Structures are given as structure tokens and as C-alpha cells.
Amino acid sequence: MFESLQEKLEDALKRIRGQNKLTEENVSEALGEVRTALLDADVNFAVTKSFIETVKEKSLGLEVKGNVLPGQLMIKLMHDELVELMGSKKSELLTSAKAPTIIMVAGLQGSGKTTFCAKLAYQLKKKGKQPLLVACDIYRPAAVDQLVTLGQSIKAPVFSKEGAKPQQIAEEAMDYARRYGRDVVIVDTAGRLTIDEEMMQEVADLKQLLSPTEILFVCDAMTGQDAVTTASAFNDRLELTGVVLTKLDGDTRGGAALSIRQVLGKPIKFVGVGEKVDQLEPFHPERIASRILGMGDIITLVEKAQSQIDEKEAAKLEEKIRKNQFTFEDFLGQMKMIKKMGSLKDLLGMIPGMDKALRGVQLDERAFARVEAIILSMTLEERQNPRLLNGSRRRRIALGSGTSTQDVNRLIKQFEDMQKMMKQMTKRGGAGAPAMPGIRRPF
Ligand SMILES: Nc1nc2c(ncn2[C@@H]2O[C@H](COP(=O)(O)OP(=O)(O)O)[C@@H](O)[C@H]2O)c(=O)[nH]1
Ligand SMILES: [Mg+2]
Image (cartoon, rainbow, N blue to C red; front, top):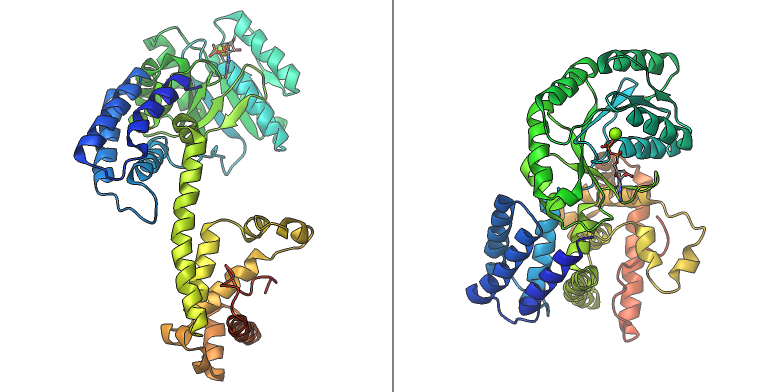
């Protein structure tokens, strides 16, 4: 997937990777190649143009932190922009508050609609849902058979009716779904080789009739920019809720994946990565961007940048501890940092030896939130000078944070113990500041 684009981008970025300084000249040169690579991959022209402009503008204003080279930072910037281009976050399937949730698929013939319907039903079944597949592609008898066969293979019921029109089939299928308690109805529709008015009218009528929760446009990723044009036509008529990109396992150039979100303003929700029913994945912009840019480099880069910033913070903290100036405010900062990095357990698990020690231990992440709430309820003055915390202040803090005075007392006691421990540590010559003092035990 995306091999050719990846290679070309890598070449373009080689120029900039080790640069100590980003100048108008070397940025433009590298971005010129990036531009060609994107256009060769059939990325939409307007999307490419605005992408290049944004990256250029941002890279010239880059503030270089730690030992990270400007060129490396620029690669990270490109990565982030690619993610943004594809919609930032993973986009979930919508469900209707009132069952059944209705999902209608539309798209050209051969794009993978029928296959997608079965894949989705299979995935939903695994999540405990009870999908019903509906065969509204009546023009090719083989299409109904195909859905029936797929339905059998995943043990999901398929509603079909010979000789009936799609609207009638849809109506009766809804009755069936209600009667038999099917909570998701997936409607497969007919496609043509090109967009035509008759087909459009038919799906538009089905939409009118069903008011689907999701109207997903299924498109073959191999068709590149054509896919975007078709998607726009469908979107104008149907107001899509999302897109499914199929055949990403093939020799996809990347154009559709990179353009469609930006052009339509609709999220890509799934990607098909093979012909089998289990070959459907949620669309993760982050992962695709990493794949396009070459993963290893970026990861190392991000980690490196992060560790350098953290090193500076750690040094500052050590200094404070040495001078016995560690306050609740610092404590809060540390907690924020940890939260940014993910779950407490995951984080502790990264420390060699901790993984084993933590096995079976229940770390209460909510307790963590409680501690944060308590500290946030303190005034800045109190955070910096915990000695101010008399009885009435403690009561006020408990009230403000939705905790009890005991909780507040316990935290202050733990904080004081921690301060003592730190003092001893520094007296003994100091092993340096532990990344997060006092979190060995859950509060
Ligand atoms: N490699 C690959 N083939 C797929 C994928 N999705 C569908 N296909 C194949 O594409 C062809 C057309 O799919 P089909 O579901 O019948 O398309 P429809 O006409 O839109 O219903 C079939 O041969 C499928 O097996 C996919 O994600 N990867
Ligand atoms: Mg079909």
C-alpha cells in the first residue's frame, strides 16, 4: 500500500532530514519534490496545493527545541499535517438512539459495496449486534446471490424478494427487522459503471424512505482522483455521512485516501484490506500517515523530541527538590505530563521490571483524577505553600473538588511524606528526581 508515494516522499525528505537550518531555499526545494510525489500519487490538485502551502508556512516558523534538527521537526510537521488532512481522529460508526440503526451503502459497481455490507455485518455480530442484510441490488440476479452466500458464511440473515422493487424490499425488510429484533439494518444498493440519473434517483428514494443513520459511500481506493469526483456527485445528492475505502491492500497510489476527506468534508470510516469478510479495519489517520511517511523515523523522532523536553523539565525539578521547593503546583505538572503520555499503568509498565510487578495490581485511574481535582481546588498560594492548609481551607478544598476532608488530609500527608523522602534522597547525595515521586502506590 502506498509504496511508490512512500519512496518518493522519503527521497524528497532526505534532503531536509539532516539540515541544521531551514531556509526558504531548502524548504522550497524539498517541498517541490513532495508536491510532485503527491500529484503522482493522484492526490487532488487543490488539496496538494494547500498542503504544501501550510507545511511551508509552518516549517519556516519552526521553533527548534533541544537537539532536534529542524529538518527532523519538519518531517514531524508533515506527518501531523497528513493526519490532519485525513481527518485527525478515528471516526466511529453512528448508531441510532432508536433501534434499528439503518446503514445504507452506495457507490459504483465493483467498488466493493456488497463485500463491505457482509464485512460490516460480520464485525457488528462480533460486537454482539444482530444485523440484517438487505439486498436492494435487484438488477443483477447474481448480486442477490452474492449477498445471500456471504450472509450464510457469516450466519447473518439476508432479506431479499424476487420481482420486487428496491423500495418495496426496503420497506418489507424494515418490518422484518422490527419483528425479529434486528438492531442494525444494512442496505446494499445497486451501482452502475458510471454515475447515472436513474441510479441516483433510486438511492435518493431509498434514502427518503429509510432515513438512514449512516449513508456510506464505498469507493475503490485504486481509482484515485476519479473516486473523489464520484464521491462528490454522490455527496451532492445524498449528503453522505462517511466513506469506505476498499482495496487498500492493492497497489493503491494514495490519492483517494489523501484527498477524499478534505474535498468532501466527510470522514473515512472503514478501509477494506482484502476480499475476505474479516478484512475490514477502522480508518486510523495516524497509522496511514505513518505508513505513508515511513514509520520508524517518525516514531524515533517524536520520542527523541519528547525525551529532550522532558530532560529539561526533569533537571528543573531536580533543582527544586534539592532546594526543597517542590510544591503541589509541580506535582500537578507532573501528573499532567503523565496523563499526556497515556494511562498510568501503561506508563509504569514501560519501566523495566515494573511490568511484572504490576501484573494483577489494580491501578485506580479514578483516584488519580481525584488527586488532580483536589490540587486544582487549591489556590495557587496554597499549592506553593502547603503549610497554609489549615482545617477550614481543607474543608473548602474538599467541597470544591467533590471529595472528603479525609481525602484531602490523606493527600497532604502523602505529599509531606514525599517531601521528606525527597529531602533524604538529596541528603544522601541524591539519586536524582524520580519521574513521578510518590506514585508507587495508588492513592
Ligand atoms: N482486494 C480486495 N478486493 C476487494 C475488497 N473489497 C471488495 N473486493 C473485491 O472487489 C470485487 C467487487 O466487490 P463487490 O462487493 O461485488 O462490489 P459491488 O459491485 O460494489 O457490490 C469483488 O471481487 C470483491 O471480492 C478489498 O478490500 N480488497
Ligand atoms: Mg454488489
